[in-house]
Length: 152
View 1 (cartoon, helix red, strand yellow):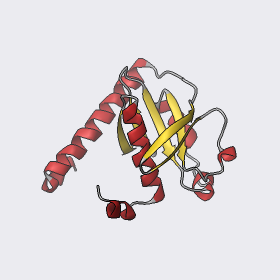
View 2: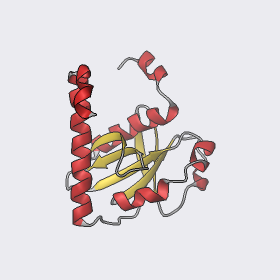
View 3: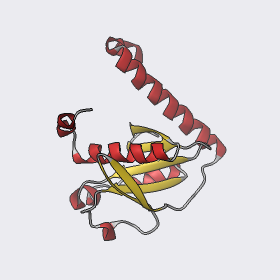
View 4: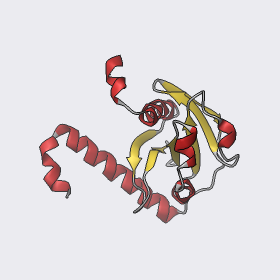
């Protein structure tokens, strides 16, 4: 991706890109804008080498964070929850009982891990199936953009 291509992304999307790179360095695969259940859409979901599931919410500003009322609903769908923010974000706003990632479009770093609260086996199986189906559909759409009629 050329530098000019990044100009078309919103700040949260740039954070998601750097976060995906970080997750990859830990052996995770990730999907952006995944819907774990009706009414929720997480910014980044990662699945690790042992099947662990992390959710990362990317916040580009104080206003973006303060307008997010759904984040606690994400806790039921992951083993660990993180916020991803840039270096200028006022991190004192973020709850202490969550993980913190600082990043940009090119990479990120875990500042502190979110506490682990392991999913029940049935929920984990359902989330991995949702993750896999979402990823496969998106890959298919990249290869065959005219096939969208198949998914409606």
